[in-house]
Length: 169
Picture 1 (cartoon, rainbow, N blue to C red):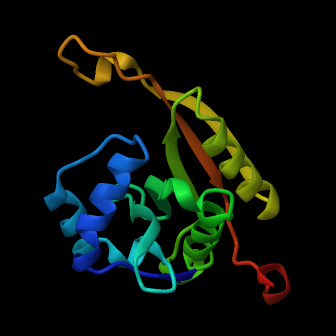
Picture 2 (picture 1 turned 180 degrees about the vertical axis):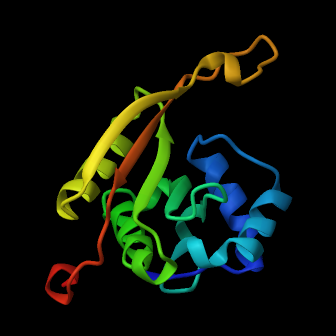
């Protein structure tokens, strides 16, 4: 897998991948626009033919310019178990110093044990503190009588420093 920043042409595949992985899916337009406006703070993993097999989307918080907010992590179900999510998270984290960032934030539902483990290992391996706190309740997410959205807890990791070349190897 080759990691790189996305381009607008990757938006449709990212939209499909979000649906295939059971994530909250936004409009195809949102993913394409994301790939244009937030490419520098996002990453895609491409297979040997260049097809997007996984992605991370995130941005620098406007009211907290030292904080990166990771919005979505998606990995093609056929590619799970290859540590792609962690590799992409490290790809982004290794650029924190260049972007003037010290903290990573994300939201995670209480039952998402895979994401919780991913963030815990990232914080541990970077020697950073990790804090969990409630952020959004189910009432923040309207629904039309279907299954209500679970609450989202905020994870905050930091301060983060750049890894050494030995740590990246």
